[in-house]
Image 1 (cartoon, one colour):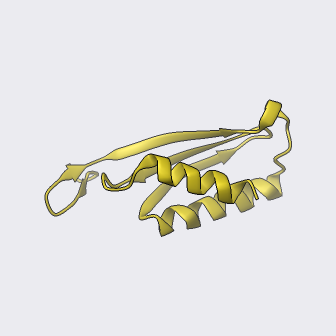
Image 2: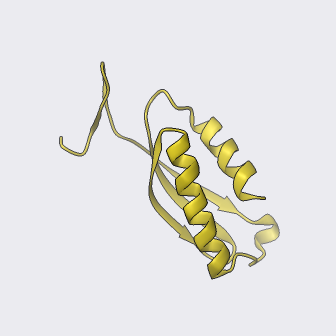
Length: 87
């Protein structure tokens, strides 16, 4: 039970596997761009009170494993990540 998170009235372990795919699966993500996206995703997760557990990029997709508290809605995190990482 050590790996569970504790709130004032709850015990939880919520992890989400999020995948972002480029349009038409074009291989446009370079290694340098992938490193920047991983660092920026970690920063954005920290701002939304989440923890980025793992991040991997390929030429045409990005996989994120994120741990969130129950009070954070996954939709708000995904919208924030999509809008900021696409720029």
